[in-house]
Each structure stands twice: as structure tokens, then as C-alpha cells.
Image (cartoon, one colour):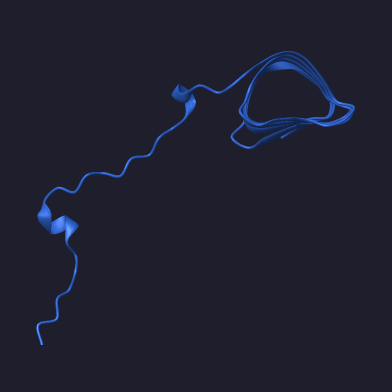
Length: 108
């Protein structure tokens, strides 16, 4: 999703949000990756955040991967993402012994 105008409110995206040089966002944003080349004001939750040379961010950023390029600016707070937000996949336990031993034996 790319913002070239003005957006205010709540933005949720499972992919990348790009705020272009002409873009202005005043919102609570949740996205996988956010690239800021315009103006962002609000609270941001993302795996990766990039503030480009023309980008300006104000507010709170929750991310473990923040990059601010020369010329870009950020005024506010940064917080690491909490462990509660990380989804953990576990391997199911086998039901009985036949599920764990799938080997073929050669008795020749």
C-alpha cells in the first residue's frame, strides 16, 4: 500500500506500507514493513521501519529493526516489540511410538 495524499485514522497491512514524499499519515499503523519518505505522526507497530532522506516521523515506533537514513528525522520514542506479539510455532507431539519410527529395516 502506498500513501501519496493524506490519511488519518487506523491503517493495518500484512505487507509493506510506503509513505511517499507527498504522503502525510496521522494514524496508528500496524504493518510488516513501513517506509517513510513523507510525514508520519502517530504510533507505529512494524517488523521493519525505514525513514528515508526526506522522511519525518513523530510519535512512537514499536520495532526491532529501525533504519534512519542521512537526512531523515525522528522525534519520539522507540520500543522493542514485546515477546507477546511474536507468534511461536510448535511441533505437535507424536501420538504413539509408531508415529516416531518410520524406518525400513533390511533383514537380508
